[in-house]
Length: 306
Image 1 (cartoon, one colour):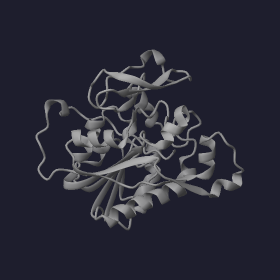
Image 2 (cartoon, helix red, strand yellow):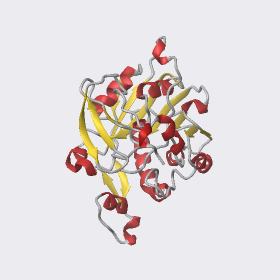
Image 3 (cartoon, one colour):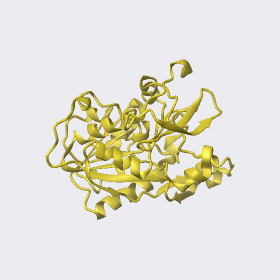
């Protein structure tokens, strides 16, 4: 249970500005709201639980099979559409020459992407905070570790992928720097997240499914994701197409509709739900400044819901 008396109202997690405007307030208890920075345009949750509170949730063995409002009621039920989504992403990366060598996935969940990556990488490593998820994922990869990116050691890896994770972290620039520290110079980092700039969000308003409270503490559009990667020192940024498949009953549930169980075998491709960017680690690493010397925040598990 989260204690609202301990909630915090942070400055902008990207630029530190205190200037913000309210995007939406939610009527549920405890109280949550999403605000947007007037300076850099990043949207973020405020008030929000502390990072310590949220890490306890992500470390729970039942995070991917939860009976509570947080987590996933059945992540495994989304296996087929998630695999199809990840396969298409990997095929896109292969066509542009961004596969091969070693892969690290941060926030790997049950390891579906790592399993689909067999034809594309010679070594596949993952991390996740849920020990239960890691136990499942170990049969689908060469190595999987409990914890953040640092749990995988120093690397270096040729490619690092983090799918629907950055919206959970409290210091996005520090998080991306922690990825870059484990990627070889010139290597590739791919980051995906729900698209706050999408027509879906504008049309659905407060019912937008990616308002996943209180787990999603950050909300990125393409421009704010780009600013985050650039602030972390990455270069040669490019958008990545990211169509996403979802189970038809899950889509209906998000629209407050009820479908017969027989529809469970059908999936629906929905465009423009996710913004994804590819970036490269500089060939010559710059000296870290004093603010980046502290340990970066932990990454959390990959998300599968729309």
